[in-house]
Image 1 (cartoon, one colour):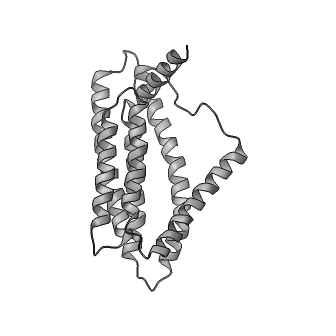
Image 2 (cartoon, helix red, strand yellow; image 1 turned 60 degrees about the vertical axis):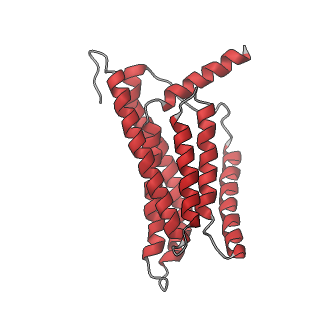
Image 3 (cartoon, rainbow, N blue to C red; image 1 turned 30 degrees about the vertical axis):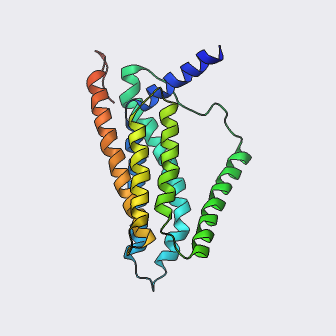
Length: 213
């Protein structure tokens, strides 16, 4: 019984990621983060803009995550569900509000810890490699829990190689490296997502009598 339940979970996840919409939305969020970190590189060091940019990172991430989830839901409602049915992908256990607040606080503390480590080491050039490995592990985990969607392996490999390569480059600031990481990886996800979505639309035409809203 437990094995059958796990197989059903995998089929649901496979279906939810099959249309590529998730990659398009997350890729768009990464491109927005790329523009955010590019702001660090472009503003004058004598101005107060870097301070404001640092303080705004949390709000950019929070707003971006909420907006990304909302856009995914909207696109699926108008594109995916009319073709192949409604399936909602969510965590089985919804955390109560106090736990959610603690999780967000833990995330903020983790970012602060990274900043402290960077200042202690004297450089932040390792950040792209670190993020590349973190996102690579997450994407590889998606591969193992989505009934074998191999493209997540390609995403994971690019994340690790891109982050590691940018960290090894000398002569550019950490903000510029992060901007390139998020920009290139975000564009990669968007292009892949558009290609997957185009294939999905060809293989799953809208039933007669239906129409994209």
